[in-house]
Image 1 (spheres, rainbow, N blue to C red):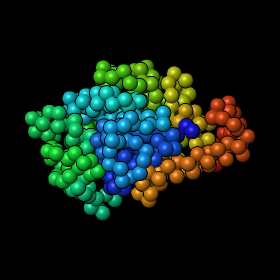
Image 2 (image 1 turned 90 degrees about the vertical axis):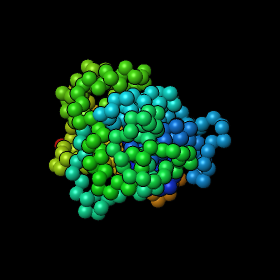
Image 3 (image 1 turned 135 degrees about the vertical axis):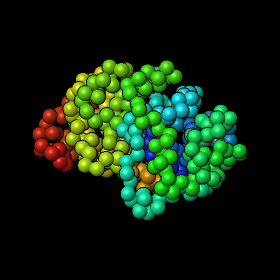
Image 4 (image 1 turned 90 degrees about the horizontal axis):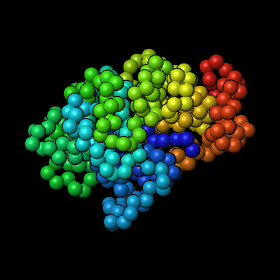
Length: 340
């Protein structure tokens, strides 16, 4: 199934198992997951997550069961390049499948709903990956002071740096802006490439010209993404630009897309428009909140069944057939690419 779980921050706010539950559920469904820089679970724990129940705290030293699907690491390039380097090197060391460099959020959009509801990260949670990266050089004194608390579902809290603890409230946006490098240019690809031999995926491409440049700078895949539509009011939808981006790439790298995928027909439309894979975000978070890892697995199985049935009704037996018959599918969908 050409589907991946999109990177999402603060998953322990949805369920006590957090990113561990997301990993176990997606692995059980044989679907790759992308782990967020803003994770509330450490990178090493996610990398070694087994697929047994939520109440199991450790793998007892046994080999990690990954079902061959693996995990990617989503990277926010920080102003502190040394911390950025440490995160990339850790992902490489732990066997992640690739680095997904996010460029669609150089600053945080104005999220009025967060302000109106006084959005707050509980002080029992922690931005664990950032804490680990900073802990290696604790003498730097930290970057932001994000409050106090414990380490989410990680047992090894120890003497954690205080900078990445909860209690953020609406200050999260301000802290985000102080951390993320808002002056990124194309040299960031070379910087990340100098740190790892893992595939590099550029997330946040919305124009054909940028897609062509990304390929020229040597990325292995791009993600057509507008950050879930939460960054900029009235921004264009990802499906509306997918075809032109795919044409600009001309098969030189893979094209992934996120945003609004809910049914099997959504996957078919994305593939017909030129995508090699889709990333699913919000539905997976809802599934995690409702049922932990079992909920994630069930939601992915449901999407898989929906895709299979839709393909059968379209007379397609494989993803390659969708690509081969894309012109017929798009013609039947109409100019706005409405349901197949």
